[in-house]
Image (tube, rainbow, N blue to C red; front, top):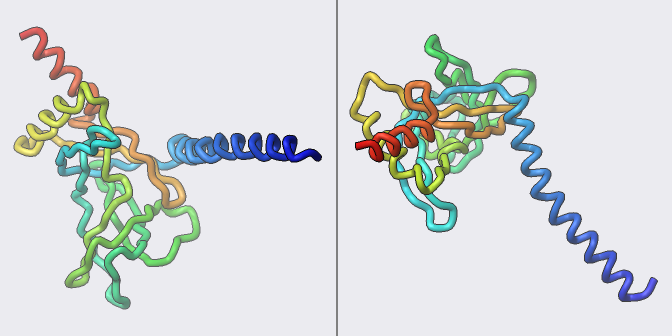
Length: 192
C-alpha cells in the first residue's frame, strides 16, 4: 500500500474513533436514563456560573451526612458505594455504605468521601450540577432562593441510577420542573 493510501486509511480510522467515543458516552447515559431506577434527592441550592459551561444550579443534598461502618478508616477522596432506598415520601435515603463495588441487584450509587468524622462521612455526590439555559437561569435561581425560606415547599433532584452510575434528569420544586417554574416567572414578569 502506498504511503498516501495508508495515511488516508489512518485518517479515516481516526475520524471514526472520534465519532465513536462521544457516541459511546451518550449511549451509556441514555441506557441509565431508560433502564435505571429513579430516585428523588432533596436539595439545598446555590447557583454559581461556570464561564466555560454556562449557568448551573449547584446541588447539595439533605442526605450528604451518612453514618459509616466503624470497622475501617475512611479517607478524603475515597470512592464509596451508597446503598439506596426510598423513604415514605419517596425521597432517597442511604441505607448503608461500603468501600467495595456491590454485586447483585440492589440500588447503589458510586460517590466520594468529602471528609469523615465521628463515625459519619460527608458525601460528594456525582450529580451536583444541573445546567440551565441562560435565559431561564436567573429566574430559576430566584425560584430556588424563594424555596430556601419557604418551609412548605420541597425542592428535589430527579436522578436515574443504574449499576452505580447516575444521570440527573431534572430539578423540581413541588413536583414542577425548575425550567417550567422559571418560564412561569418570566411570563409573569412580562404581563406585569
